[in-house]
Image (tube, rainbow, N blue to C red):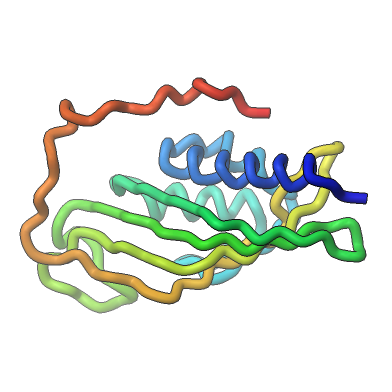
Length: 167
């Protein structure tokens, strides 16, 4: 039987997903998935959780990223799983003209702003909720082109990775 503490654990699990993704903490990211987790909707094909982490690490190499998930809708299923739907926004920046967009050359392209949803399923693994299905559904992508204006990094405050330790 699931209760409020299970939903809170899943909210923390998803927060860890975004934190590890942007910090490029690949071992931390891998720890959030079942070994046989399935993935869909990403700009790369994956076979399992290890392949997903390898693929996303390659995709985000040289990319400054901010991923956000919010407004979760969580529901227990009859087969001891929980389904989740998360609104999402991501902001990805890379060196100008260093990437194409879905195989097309876009002059001056230096990033994207994306919007949409994550559809997920969570199952217990060794007593902890872990992601067993993850599907990214994009509803909008804004291409960032032209002159890239970025504040100097010295004006930004870096997060403290171990402020809240992993569970």
